[in-house]
Length: 247
Image (cartoon, rainbow, N blue to C red; front, top):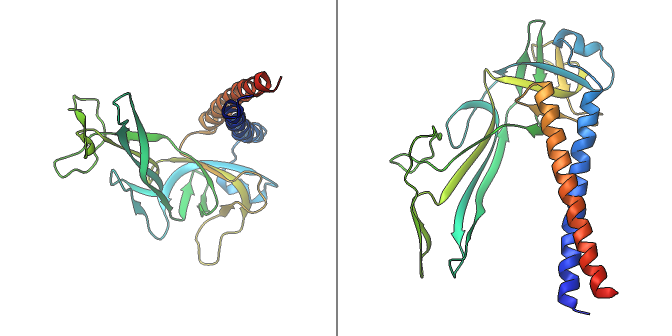
């Protein structure tokens, strides 16, 4: 019995199980969201259990400027990755060197009324914006699809250097943009001028998305199915490797 091969099989199976867990969670969320439809904001306070609303975003007390692209928003997630080449030039991979998120309470507005939303504790489903372009000051700029110089080299003692060796990813809830919110409805905090507050208290899913309900459900379905299938395949492969060594 080759112990190294057994350990490799166990690791692969473990990764597969993790994929099944992530996929299962996304599929449960997809099923939960499929059970209800969004309601007008002025009717949310009378709804019991999980409530879904949609509307346009406007700031409450303050807003944020996104890290990479300087957009006016109420929530963002960002990541900076650096491409690293292997020592023998056999390939390269991207490694995260910086990441973070920030958010502010905001107001969601539709034709019927307004909802106060505090994103603390929420899950975000946001579209990804990624670029490897920078301006003359080395700051990232949106990728408009135009030609971009991308040259890199692996120099002994210096590692990976060149143009295009970093990529910048950002996800946002933009002021003026669309938001689909899932949570529970309660009275807004004292001093807040809104018809209702959408919170995570008692909600099986507290989620904020920059897409419509239908698009958000599709994201969850694709994510859940992808992770579940990959996890199932990895688990089976890992079991086969371990079994072949033990038998």
